[in-house]
Each structure stands twice: as C-alpha cells, then as structure tokens.
Length: 158
Image (cartoon, rainbow, N blue to C red; front, side):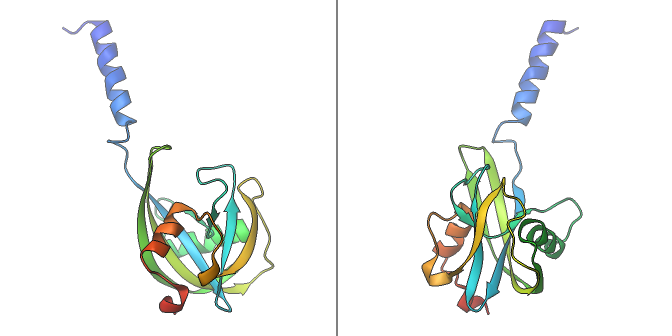
C-alpha cells in the first residue's frame, strides 16, 4: 500500500507534468488578412502576449468551429467588419518560449464586404490601420513576421 504522502507527491508530479511545456499541445490560431486596394488591415496588440506588435485580426479556433467561421467571427468581434471571398492562405508554426505557448496559425485571406472599421476590443488592440504589404509597420506579431519571412506577399496570393 502506498502512503498518503507518497501518493500526494506522485499526484503533484503528475499535475506538474501535465502543465509542462513538453506535454502541452499546440493551439490553432486563425489570422485574417483582409485585403482592400492592395493594402492589409493590421492592429497594434496590447494586454496579451505580443503586446506592442502589429497583427492581423484573428484568434483561437474554437472546438467544432470551421476555420472560415472563426475568421468571420473574429473579424466581426474585433473590427466590426464583415468579410467575403474567404480563401485559405499559408500557415505558420510559432513557439512563444517565454509564455510556454505554441501556435499553428492558419491564415485566411478575405475581402472587406461591409461595416465601419472600429476598435471593438480596446483592451486588446490600440487601433486598426491599413498598410501596403511592402511597408508593414514594425514590430510584427511573430506569426505575421514568420509569414513574411516565408516570402508570402498579398500580391502573390491574389
């Protein structure tokens, strides 16, 4: 029979292993590149990992949700814009060591369909602006920086 103190230490050890970076699974992110007149919409992040960097609208893929539904939901929640002509872009694979997070980000390209651009989550984003792909602001959120380093351009995607 195992003593209570040994069982408790074993449980603590098992719980620690469940939360260690080696055991954690990657998350799926969806980034939406809304293209209008050759420019892309980016927001300056705040209050989360990547604060101070520029990122496309997007977020976590929810259980049972399609990538397209996630893109539509996140863009509306963050920017008040409706999007159309959704098409799959490339993906990136980023590990955020300091935060012990690992994301595979699926990028979706879309056109602006309707809505007035607004900063709907001011606690998460300082504001939105349109940028030419050849003149993106710095620093970029790591998945977007990785996308650029892979040679992706919005011109090559259309």
